[in-house]
Length: 265
Length: 351
Image 1 (cartoon, each protein chain N blue to C red):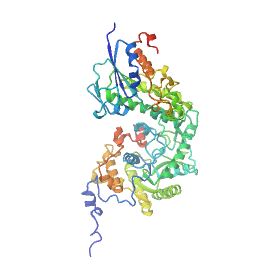
Image 2 (cartoon, rainbow over the protein chains, first blue to last red):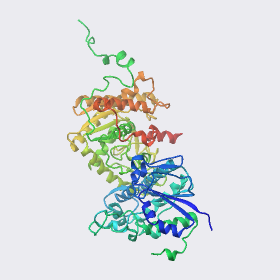
Image 3 (cartoon, rainbow over the protein chains, first blue to last red):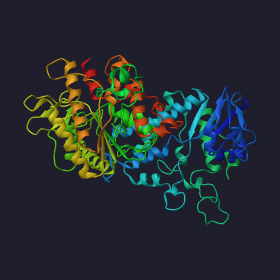
Image 4 (spheres, rainbow over the protein chains, first blue to last red):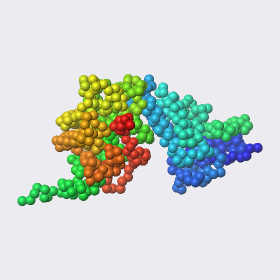
């Protein structure tokens, strides 16, 4: 039997998808002891990291119901999965949406941007974030960064939670190609600063830059639904957490889930 | 009978006004004709030094117009490399008043520059702003398409402006012999090919600069009747002169001509003022401390002194209150050396 590995999943509210899948993760990966540490985005951003201790601001502790402490020591963990970095996705998409690219054939009377400028501006956005992450956590090879999931495919429909940039970009012929380049830049820039990044697994995606609707959290599609919560097209459910954790375990730990039949729901 | 100088203030005398004054804060040096406030919409243009003005106004959260820079937390260094966030529109450095007038004429549909696209290493650049696409564009058509949109944005910027801040940089210019089209750089330097049959050198005279300033004012007021103009002269000496003479007298001629023209026009119109940043930076009492080792580039201290003078003159309440800036220009780690200046590139290309 393999020795137990201690894994930490830490990040913004997107850690919720993993936390809700914790029982499946525990059953599917009995050799892993997984801890979860999640904070709302703004609190996560303002948390400190010093001498291996990640600490939320005192006045912001216990913001998530399942959190029992406001700091965590990274030392005991063999791998740490950081969840929720967006790499300024919205700004990247808006840059592509609000400009016609000179070298692309489509013309919509928007301002022009050259391919070179678009490329360098996108890379500049990503580089800033990568440099910010390495400045915060150091070039630690045990850390793996998973971007926040792309919004759900349903979010492009008009209504609450409508993702304007996403909806506009998918109508533009160059959208998917430039999103591929943007993702490639994330990998390249993270590698340059010595950090590991795992992009959202393709099997969870709808197209190039949306998430399949089956990963929606229950009762978050409309406000009129009985018992509905707020409309949410950005945070995913336990299936997503499970699926992505499997991808992480396979690619970073060389593990596959045990007895997948028993795990099927 | 006393002398007419008997009752003049200390600022009227060289010893008390300059030699014994703190060169970073000279009292009475800037006496604005009109106040500019943080809510006035300001359009900036001109030579390299104007980039400092633009950046510092933005850093103080003044209402600086920017009609072309993409919104978002893009690194300033990347934006600047492509001519964004340097001025109110993406026109790059405009060294001569004639070029500014020509830009407005073109935007108003009255003029088409000759030889508008220059070739560089198999790529194409806009001859009127050769630095905004550092790698060039793949076709001349792309250059012209981008220029068409740019010209519309220039007009938009003027029509929004309450104040037009313009830094006069040079009197020396290269122009197209047949049409009079002027260019910000000599053909063959950053792009294009120098053909003496097509292009020629000219050094503007005082009446020419003065007339160009008059035309600039007229054109701006046609687009925006209530606009006010604030003129400055760049304290940055010439990198090189094409006059055939020594660069030092060429610089003196250029700056003296620009300074005199700005002074004359400012003295003539209520809606034109002159801001003495040139005098502050070149002040002999500063002992050259406002220049870097190359004796051309202005130090951060020099820029800070000039901008302090500006803010003290136009918004003293804000300047003396505890300063809370939402955007610090130094936050992005840039220094003066990051400013985009074709002249520096010319120098680099010669090294």
